[in-house]
Each structure stands twice: as C-alpha cells, then as structure tokens.
Length: 214
Image 1: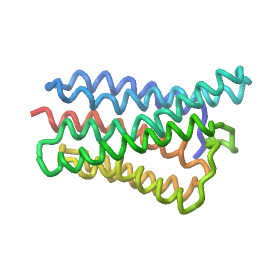
Image 2: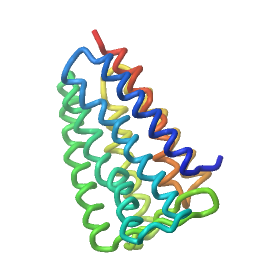
Image 3: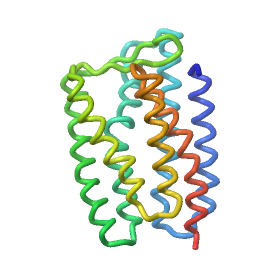
Image 4: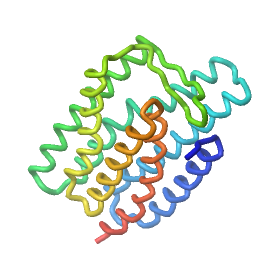
C-alpha cells in the first residue's frame, strides 16, 4: 500500500460527503457531536494532503510546520479527549457513563501531556518512501512508548468498546484491528497510517447514526 496527497485528499472529500449524509440522518440533536469524527478526520486528512504537497513543492518552512502541527493536533491532542467525551454524553447506562467519564478525564491528561511535548520539543514531518514519518522532538524509550500507546488506546478505542451505543463496538474492534496492522506492518510510520485507516473507518458513523435513530 502506498500513500500520497491524492489518497489523503480523496479520503477528505469522502469524509466530508459522509458527514453531510450523516447529518441528514440525525433525528436527535444530542447525536450531532458524532459528526465530529468524520468531520475531524476529513480536516486531518486534508492537512496531511498538504503535508505531502509541502514535500513536493517545498512550502515555506512556517507553512510546512503549520500543516504538520495541524495534523498532529488531531492525532495527539483532539482525539484522546473528544472521543470519550462524545461517548460519555451519549451513554445511557450509568456504570458505563461513569467509566467513560473517567476515560474522558484520562484522555484530557493525555491531550495536555502531548500539548506540552509538542511545545517543548517540537515535531517534524519527512517523507519515508511513500509514507509520512512524523518525529517528536522529545525522545522516548521503548517502555515509555508502550505505556503511552496503551493509555492512548484505552481512552480512544477503549471508549468505543465500552459504549453501549449500537454499532460503536464494531467501530472499536475495527479501529483496534487497524492499529495492530499499522503497528505490525508500518511501525515507523504508524501515526500516519493508523490515522488514515481510522479516517476511513469513521465512514461507519453514517451506519451508526442510522442504527440509533429510534
């Protein structure tokens, strides 16, 4: 599999279209935040498309950094808080809501930690064959990366698997599977690859909203 600006922009357009179609299926206003998934991933993939173009056309360094940080904002700061927060708001079961509330708090800590890391150490993006390799300025040991990865999975995928919203666990299982694939086959560029897979999987929001219309 090879990635490119065209692939990212195509995914962005498809996600924008499914966001509009999903909006038309919504019958309850409280479901509106679910649209943040396909819309957020549409913006993220658009930004990665610009990252690709920055390699090809040698963007101004400031602009290159802006699109890189824009992509990483979604990957490291937005999703760890947004996903459990939205699912908490939609949860009907008291026990599940309490657990999701805890994940939201933990997710906000993850987001804040990554914000500090990005501010303190910065980040860069470079082309590695046909993939984008993102590098953080702060270096972590393997053990630290393992712990960070597990916590990130807990607050994002764990929130999906803990939700009683119909169809959300399917999305959680699919997202977890895509994480395993990205880590196993694309370890060095897993951030970019997993975000691309997760973006495509967010198309399932259209189906999930349909399941929960009643």
